[in-house]
Figure: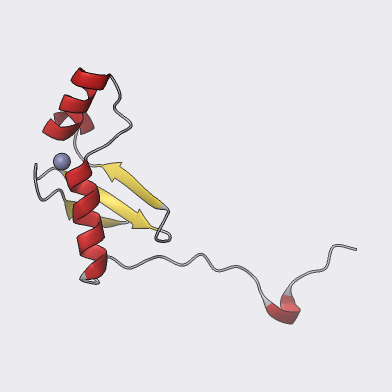
Amino acid sequence: MQPLNCETCGRGVLVEKFSAAHTSIQWTSDASECPMIRDAVQSVGDHRRGCSALRRSIDRAVERHELSESRIDLPTGPDLPRLH
Ligand SMILES: [Zn+2]
């Protein structure tokens, strides 16, 4: 996991990027302290929306290659055990 700060609210998170579509975020502070998330919870009652500014921060960090995608090594080739 790599540390990243939301460029809008400055909250710190740890980010693990598995692929373009799969990002795991772990808050190092209380997620409800993020003003974007607090607004979402208050207006729609949904805290899973997350912080769109944070998501933008992550995308930008990936573009700048500050955040690298972690690769999950899957066994390939002749070493792959056969199940029969
Ligand atoms: Zn935020």
